[in-house]
Length: 117
Image 1 (cartoon, rainbow, N blue to C red):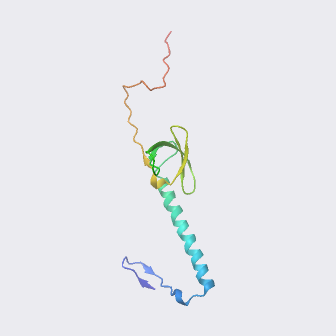
Image 2 (cartoon, helix red, strand yellow):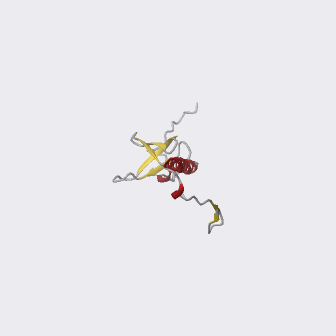
């Protein structure tokens, strides 16, 4: 073992002395660990959003899309665009949309006026 520049203890493995079977086992363990770290990172990023949030992202070769977050998956979130398209998007690609409301403008409001009797 030796100490890294960050002060962490690191275990040195001389892979030249490992058998093929040991190398395959080590490879499987490394891949699983990397998958786990990736899932944890995605989960952490998902915590920045909640169901119902308005979000935006830009698919390759397309204009930005504005969507509503509807579901969490293991590595992605499901969003529905304003025109009804469903997308599964990694949370790292999403940005929250700031909703600007003008309380004086009611032209788009879905309000029914009731008469007083």
